[in-house]
Structures are given as structure tokens and as C-alpha cells.
Image (cartoon, rainbow, N blue to C red; front, side, top):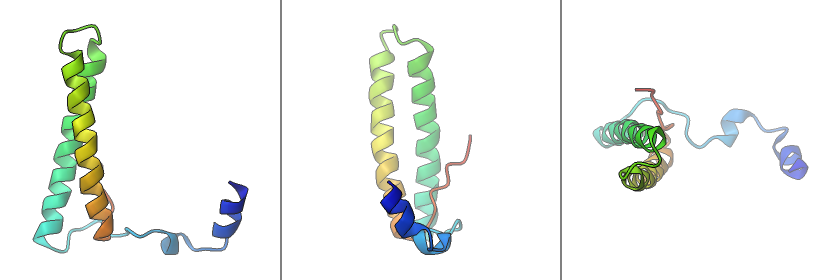
Length: 92
């Protein structure tokens, strides 16, 4: 870890980040940001329901929903970063 820190010590933070924009430049980017926000809300709801009553018959369903939402978020946020956008993670 110290070798990594040493290599990055002289680099400006802006040079280390690939994604730096927060605003969409195209309609496609706007849609990706909306999908990311919506998926985040769904993930939080699924986790809230899962942890509210883990002994419930629905706990497994909420767990699977949360895992699926995490996969969607991973893919959408990867596309956002590839386009140079920071994933929003707006609190609902």
C-alpha cells in the first residue's frame, strides 16, 4: 500500500480521476444518470425491507432484489464513468 501511495503522492487529484463531470452533456448521459438514481432508490428500499425483518418469508426475495439492483448499478455507473460522469448517488 505504501508503494501505491508513494507513486500517487505527486499527482494532482484531478489527474487521477477519470470521471469529473456531474452534468449530463447528452440525452443518453441524462438517461444513465436517471437510471442510476432510480436504481439507487430501489436498492435502498430492498435493503431496508431485507434488514427490517430478516426472518420474514420475503427476506430472501428482498435480498435477491438488492443483489440484482447492485448489478444494475455497477453496470450503469461503469458506463457513466466511461463517459466521464461521476455517479450521482443522490439520497432519496
